[in-house]
Picture (cartoon, rainbow, N blue to C red):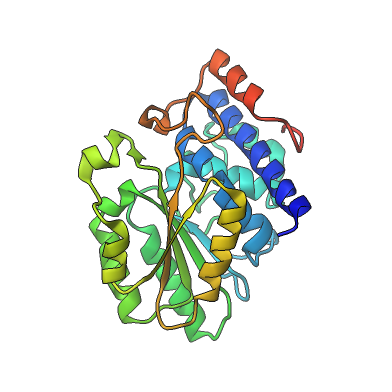
Length: 282
């Protein structure tokens, strides 16, 4: 990838990280840790790989689709949607306030452009994405369906029912990604309920498995491109994406504490001091 293009994507990611900490601070509620960790992935997807349009339609005919299963990281998705033209970035200032479209978990009744399912009740996103992918196959629609899940979410039984269904039905136009930061709300994933050899599990369930560092923009772009090249070969594809919770803000990095805690005034100032304003704050 051309270095100037890569630098531009990294600048967008830095601005979105600023958006995230400001949004969560303003309402003193939300989930900054996972949002910061997944920023590079969402930017690579929406600003480089995804075939999509801000002129949003629910059916998404002829487009690639994205589903956010771990809906608690809505700050990063809302900021990405706004920065890619789905709605005015000024609306980010309404995050989690009453009677706004930017609820803590994405909803559909608010009619926010870009959101096709309500999410945040963990374990359900893969099933929804597979339904959309199967619909595209039946309609000879060439779009690819993407879904992002959390690592703690892999403790949900519905994920594995969907995994079996996808492989059995050769739903090979779907690319799932797991944000593997090793942290969940009550502690480390290994302490709460170890996932053991996650790659071996998905391979045993009939999926093509890739792994990459989701906090390296170049590697993220390359890995998504590789995943796309493996679609329509008879098997669903999944990325195990290694990230660090709170990436980009030093005092948040690697700690489950920041799964769902808002920074105070001093912590916000420290975070913003580490994240350069590149596109202009809302």
